[in-house]
Image (cartoon, rainbow, N blue to C red; front, top):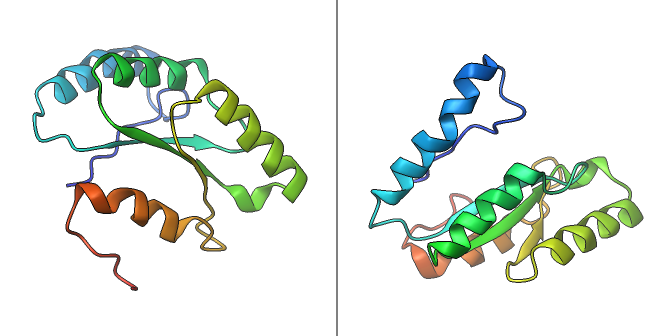
Amino acid sequence: FFVDFPGYGYAKALRSLRETWGELIENYLNGRRQLAVSILIVDSRIGPTQQDLQKLEWLRQKLLPFFIVSTKADKLSKVELQKSLTHTRSLCTDAAVIAYSAVQGLGYSQVWTMLQPYTNLMPANS
């Protein structure tokens, strides 16, 4: 199963509700022995937020495998994208960082390659 959690800072919900999500998500993840891998989705235009870095630290403490997908890569020039990826990699030296664009299809195969060791799913358009 793929489980998508809300982006705390960007979700359109009351702040009081968003503040409860951290504990809810942590409890959910703590109770999932079958959790195989986590993907942290980061907007390439913004880079990892403090909340993203906190999530990464939690994954590290739990010794859970993870990688980072830097989305909206098509919104940046090549130079800006490289700066963004370099910045993300400097903050997350223990994780693979994949540039991704749903519009251009950039990073699609790399994401599936990263997932293959954890699942027997095959991409729909392979």
